[in-house]
Image (tube, rainbow, N blue to C red):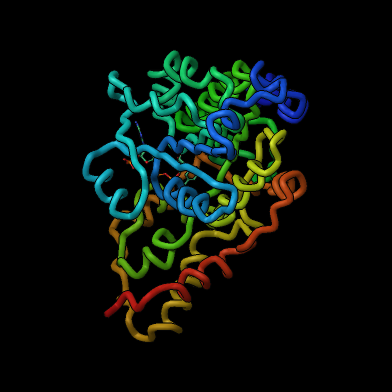
Length: 345
Ligand SMILES: NC(=O)c1ccc[n+]([C@@H]2O[C@H](COP(=O)([O-])OP(=O)(O)OC[C@H]3O[C@@H](n4cnc5c(N)ncnc54)[C@H](OP(=O)(O)O)[C@@H]3O)[C@@H](O)[C@H]2O)c1
């Protein structure tokens, strides 16, 4: 089994807890403080997707004053985000002209919520690294967070996997994810900024859950069908990811790799059965039987090369003091159904 290069190079809690601050932060001088009388926290979210939007809205409800910027790829998305009250900037990593990254120069907090591209790696790091370094290297940045995935662990034969578990990433997406983690850790190290890597289970929440899939009568993607055969599936409610990030912001010296999953890696079929029962209870007789796609059986009978694992969330609870709002899918799905208007009207 391959050991994790990232962990070998960065036994995070020993490196970043003692992290060297950038020169400007090593004294009482802080550019972020000097710009005005009051402290300005400026969050830049690379990727205002499902989580990015949720996080941006939550930051604005905090009482410590946040300016929040974020990116999306298309003009139509930008327009939608503006209508929703966000402050979007157009950024597509493939665009060599990346003037939008100029706004990074006085950010205090940076969240990367853009997935890596297999065969390329992290598109922001691979294509804009020099610009990033020049914009972020002025001492303003104090928090850098990369959203990763529990898929980096690969096949673990059903073992309980914590953040120190040897990595066995065989598939290209997992390798790209690991390389992205390493790239952001390297950048943070060079800038003297603590880096938080959050390895997330499957994200669910309002608008994206088993409940929504059933109500919309969506058929499962091939990837989802493959996951149907698993005994364990790591998942996490969007509100709990948000809690973990907020906790890491509130502990300025934090920095580390954290699994962010709930306490119950239940199989998908069980979750869907529960979601169906919740919908049936609230809106009886409304769910139509979904047709079984012809190839579903052949797909789920294929050997699942991703293997199985149960992911431990002890570290995020112990070190960041996170108490999960939704320790299992039961309360997570229940809260989604309770907050819904009647979708069948
Ligand atoms: N969803 C899950 O279950 C899950 C599980 C584990 C880890 N993660 C990871 O956690 C992060 C957030 O997840 P999410 O579900 O919120 O993702 P998401 O909704 O797909 O959002 C991804 C964001 O990245 C942007 N983006 C994608 N490719 C880009 C590129 N080449 N250049 C510039 N921007 C690009 C998208 O822009 P547009 O909005 O314009 O499309 C979007 O804003 C992602 O890295 C994801 O891979 C997700």
